[in-house]
Length: 332
Image 1 (cartoon, one colour):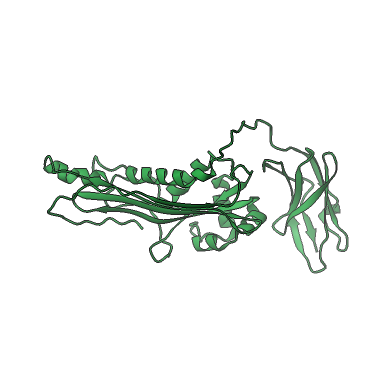
Image 2: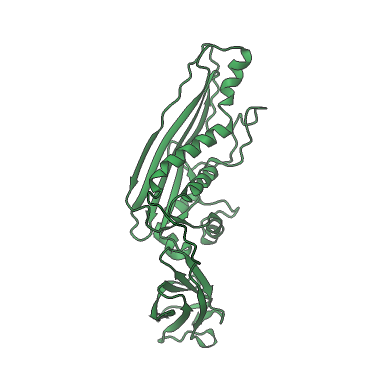
């Protein structure tokens, strides 16, 4: 929780710099290709309740001392995590795509703000199978983002937790917690009145706590950096050349299957989705580059005007999608 404490002291305080504590567990190979969705982070207080972040701090506008705050703690932390994950073998889904989609999944309030309680209550499997096409989900929590001022001494402290959850097994693949802090002040007697006042205040510059967060997060994610040398993959992503389905006039006949066909790169994993109703129906490669899949409707199932989307995934978890252009299908 952002915390600026003002306390006038009449004796000099020695400079104190705290060392951080870092813990992590790793239960998968960082070299394993994994498609990851990094969800919006939450900021909690000491009781575990979500608090709103607006990025403002009391002394950020101290002239000539503090730079302007451009991000809230959660936005900045997520941004740093995304930058650090680019140094790993993980395939990271664009956060822009995630943030656009979340409100359409009833995971935001009417004013557009994310409903973080709901976001953190949804299982990783639901995110990955229903709309994000991922293998794992990373949840991030900011537990502390404090800046304290004691007249002659200032202190910055951050505490962050990151959890990477498998969509397939729901187990924790990677978890890291860290708490780090640094002090800023006068270690010896003041050289003048201006030093006594300004030196500790400089420790409240927003850039210092942002730099502390960057160093902390970089150390947290260090176990995910591949130790093996990698050559950059310059091959193109999988290609889909043609798709079709056999629903005449877009109507699926009850008691008969809907057959979906795709002509694409061979030796890939293919599936199709019918709107928001049927997800990831597997397709079989009958011969090189020819994929076929069937959907058998149940007697009670009904839906109208749902488009069909083909998904093709390669061994590096790169995904290509194509909507069947022969029109939507209905089951009445």
